[in-house]
Length: 481
Image 1 (tube, helix red, strand yellow):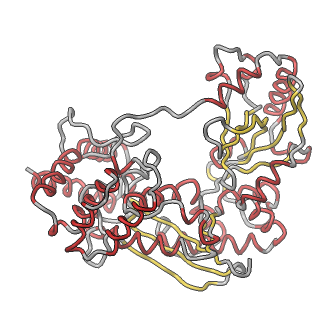
Image 2: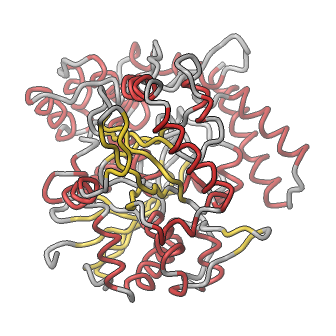
């Protein structure tokens, strides 16, 4: 580990959709494995011409449209290349607060849209990823004296801004990327004071260690002469009402998605009423990817204290029911092992990361030639890319950042793309992603602004931010007419 460095990072974005929104601010601090700071990085990006920022995102990070269009900002294409280089520096462990829950996927799509390999920072050059958020859950449950824990409306809150306020981790405004990175590094330092616990937590993000821990789980239930492991699963999405932990039964590996193991929640009150016809309604299975932010603990009595009596009784009842009704269990297992995500037709190329095959050797050479070409030569390089999706992405990069080097035909195609987004005709559909969610368009954004102004008590600055966004949309519409 002496050769490794941590790259703590955070992003602020135009919204929450990784397929269509963009990074506005990136901040990072590189440390050694003892958390001594080595270097800082911060980039701000110009708003792309085809993106309308979400009104709630603007109210959250408080960045005005004027700052997004500042001439000192970098364009997304050149900025993402810098971030990609930081992530892929040999022996880099990328991490942050809930980065595996949001930022990492967001950047994967950003890398893909800018023709950069989206996954290499997960495995290549001895690089891999961690996340402080699930580690925070472990410390909260099992080392509660390490920091002060904020309570909001009589309920524990593990939001970074609340942890920061309670423990004075960093000075500055929440949702500024650098402030959040500083707070995360300081939080990690507090955790690392208990180094044994820190090393145990880090093990969950090393694939070999995580797989080894899963293999050592006791198989405490036998159904149809087959043993199954009982365990506890920790995940932020379980929320404070569930103490971020639930009892589960391991069902094995998914039949199609081989990187996922399946875990049946045992604290669900309808489980004991399951039949072959209501499996989807009555059962709840959580999917775990190796070395990501669902953490599995062995089924030990000392962990049961974090489950309230009501959920404990439901769990015991469901375990007994599963053991007594072995005829239903194969149907439950087969349903979840063979369930696949629904396919969405006509996914926009920006959102097609999961449908687009990895570039082969020849395509990688063509993409690199595009990156290496001077702006005036990038169109020729783009047209030499044989893969349709990658070629279209290259043309979109040129449309957004180097339009002066495009032909009139290509400029017209980009105008049509922009009109999809800025058109307020209800019949005009904006591009959609693999989840069948549409890119934020002018009509939806303007309606959201009106609704927020009507339903929320806004200060003068918030009103000014939303008015500026509304004016930007209107000006763009007038320009496109």
